[in-house]
View 1 (tube, helix red, strand yellow):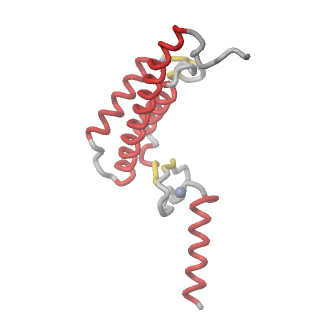
View 2 (cartoon, protein in one colour):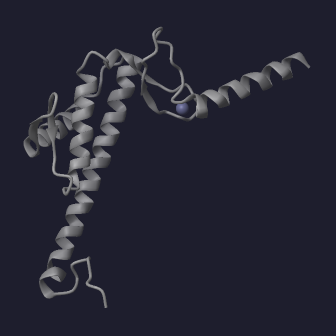
View 3 (cartoon, helix red, strand yellow):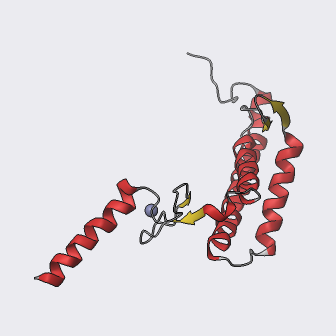
Amino acid sequence: MPPSRDGLTDARGRTRWPWVLQHHVLVGVLALRLRDALTATLEAQVTGRRPDPDDLAILAAAVAEAHAAGALALDGSLRWRWSPAELASVRHTVADAAYELLGGPSAPRIGECDGPGCGWFFLDRTKRGNRRWCTMRDCGQQAKTAGRRARRGGAG
Ligand SMILES: [Zn+2]
């Protein structure tokens, strides 16, 4: 029988397993909380509304936690780094990236896709600042197709 990787092979592992599971659930809940607060803050940014203070508090706590758990590394530029072995490193990376984006000079170029029901955000890097779609392949193409159908239907 191959060695087990789930930590359930001995008494110590079996007593530790509920804690590990609980920790992973907590990390997941915190990630979902950050996602929701970040989505609401990005929506406020693209619509010019004031962000909800509760969402900003969640974002601030996530950024502070990320920086407390991380280490600065200089590899061309100064960046926060987290241990890839830690599940929370994903949340820390997202929190730090959100802070950099929303606090940086590109914040006014954040947009939200016009595709019906899409809701993806993007960074508009076009010269004119007139990007409308998350991708041309998905929502952009659907809009073109819908426009063609509407013109044909209107003409015929
Ligand atoms: Zn889209």
